[in-house]
Length: 446
Image (cartoon, rainbow, N blue to C red; front, side, top):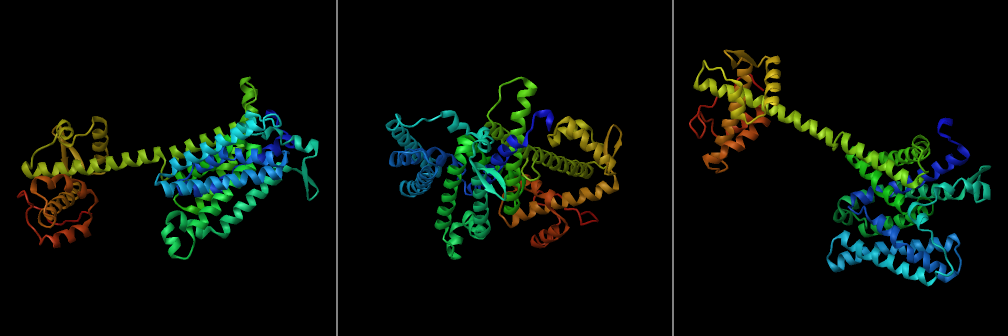
């Protein structure tokens, strides 16, 4: 990767720190997304400020351990207060989070002002983190020796955080799954849904604090929410959702870091924040998942909807041609009449007619369209389904005759031979529908 100036001794450790921190947040973020508590990570990231300030005021130093303990405790209190206000005040989760984190954040600002003569706070570091300085740790000796390799302290802490979070998910996967989808069932099964909630919130607080130094507020919040939300769009299975969220988190870190190196060189711009670039990359991956996800992607749902609409219109065409044959066996129905009766657009109608001709359902005749023998058999099944549904709705459901047509028109497209036989039996084998029109006999259609 010389063409973008990649250097493992510097960029490799930066990427490792970003990827590990992103994975640690994404692992827990899956259950925040499922529990509809995605913004709790944001609340905790803001609310840790009074914990940091209290640790400094008590110890008079900015050493890591007191700061970590203070921030983690306040992060946990954020979750406890949020749950308490939600239950006591009967307000929704979002409102209770807003009350708690804004109050604690304001308290932290007051405490920081109290200690302003003794502590310096870099706003850009708070927002963007300091991933760029991870490589410097090797030069200044801020490292751990792991199997003879000098590992930056930030990378080591992030790796431990990933292992702890992964172990928690592996050990309590079943309990977390049940309590996330049905807390009442979890309690009935002997699992404490409240205990699982607070254990998860504790780890969310710890993860936010551990990642805060390197990633800053923006990336912490992004990794709690964006990779799990993108994975949610890609699969309906929880196990695969967790796996995909991890892959998306690593991919976001890699793409974001490479982008922060390559784009300034290509566009002649200032070096962007690596954490911000990773967050942007995560957002782009989410957009791709939202567009092309196999289950919930917008483009896939659009194509599926259009295919369904085209299939229904194709059946409506042959059903209408059958009804016209009942009134006038020699009639050839023109395009304008089909469009007027079926309320369809010109392009879609022409496409459907072309497809039905290729399938051998209809033929051109006298400037219009007529059914073939194959199309007539298919249409007979549709018309039979429609009129049996009308009979059923009128006789069994008590729906008035002037309201049954639209309902039957929707149901006819999803009625097979077996269901028609059941409808025929339930309605005592009627010969005509409630409007007096004959019900076709069952043929060789579907």
